[in-house]
Length: 361
Image (cartoon, rainbow, N blue to C red; front, side):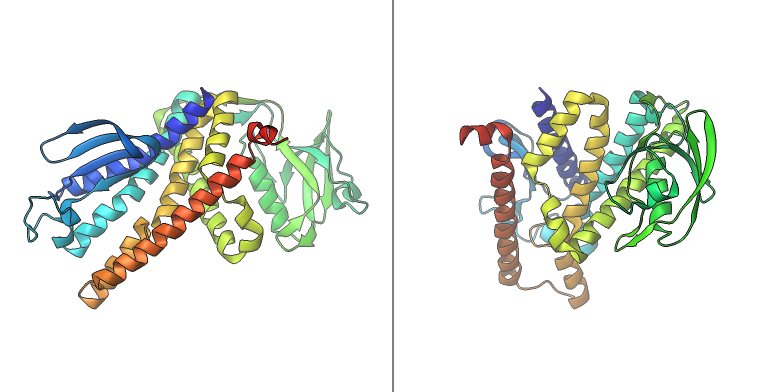
C-alpha cells in the first residue's frame, strides 16, 4: 500500500500540473480536444462536448492536447481560438499555468500539513551533538564539545524546538570559517560556555559533528489558521531556496551532484518509505516533489514548458515565430534526450532495488 500511496501522490501532482494548463486554456476560450492522465493504453475515457477526458495505463505522466495539429479536427485552421492563433501572452499563460499550479498546490499542501497533521518540533530546545567525526584533529573535540551536549546558542543566536534550528546552526558554522564562535551548551544539568573555531573547507566552516533535534520529535498542530498559513509560507520559502540552490549546484558542480539526480523509481521508493513510517509526512513529500516538478518544467529545455516559453520569447523579440521545421527539430531532439534520460534512470534505479538484486544473486 505504501508504494501505491507514493504513486498516487505523483499522479495527483501530474494531474494538478495538467489541470493548470487546461483551466488556463479553457478560461480564455482556447480549444482543447484532449485531457489525459497517464500514458499508454486508455483505461477509461469520457467524451465531452469538445474535450476527450482519459485515464491511461501508466499514471506517471499526462498531457493536454490541442486540435491545432490534429488532421481529423473539424475546426478551421484560421479559427482565432486555436492556441497557435492566439497572441504570445495568451499562449505564455497557458504554458506557464502548469508550473504555477504546482507551486500553489505545494503551498496549500504545506499549510494543510501544519493545520491538520501538525508542526514537527523537538521536545527540548537546542541542537543535540549526536557524534563527533573520527578525526585526530577534530576541532569540536579540541574545543571540549562532547556527544550528548545540547547547543542552546551560537554566536548570539538562540535555538528553540523547531527542526529548522539545525540548519540555523549549520549556517552559523559555515559562515565562520577560521573564526571564533561562542557556544552556550547544556551538558546534563550544567550550562557551560565554550569557544570553537570552525575549520575552513571549500563549502564553508566545519567542526566535524553530527547534529540532531534535542529530545523526541512530536507534531504540534497550529494554534490558529493564521499560524498555519505563516508556518506553511516559511516552509514553502525554505524549500524554494533549497531547490534553487540544489539546481545551482547541479550546474556549477555537475560531477559531484549528478549522481544525486532521482528518477521516478527512486522517488516512488522514497515516498513509499515515508508512507510506511510517517503518513503525515506525505504532505511535505508531495509539496517537495511538486516544487521540484515546477522547477524542472520551467527550465528552458526542449520538450519542457520552459523550452516552449523560450520559443515564445524569441517570437516576441523577432515579431514572428521560428520556422516550424526548426521548432519541430529542436523539440524532437529534446524529447528523445529526455526520454533517454528517463529510461536510463528507471533502469539504473530498478537494478538497485533489493528484490531485483536478489534475483541476480
